[in-house]
Length: 74
Image (cartoon, rainbow, N blue to C red; front, side, top):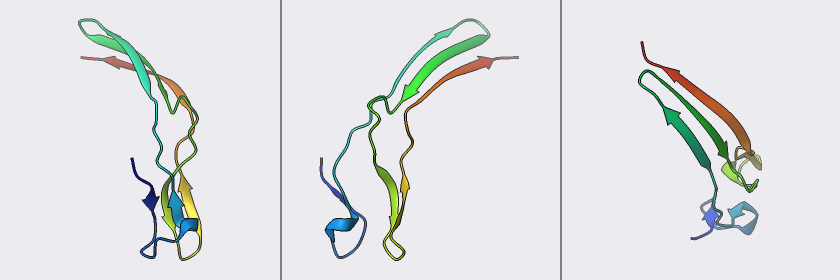
């Protein structure tokens, strides 16, 4: 994996080290319904999804999340 550079001049202050996200899910399906439990960013990795070099701001990646998905077919 390589580092990501967010500007054209390859300045270190706009560089992000490579990272890996760990997500997991487990679910069950029946004839007309389903349920799944999920977790994202299990290691609480801190990263940026975008960076604006003009005003030196960035959009942080999503934190660890847990959830449930339920579906029903009519």
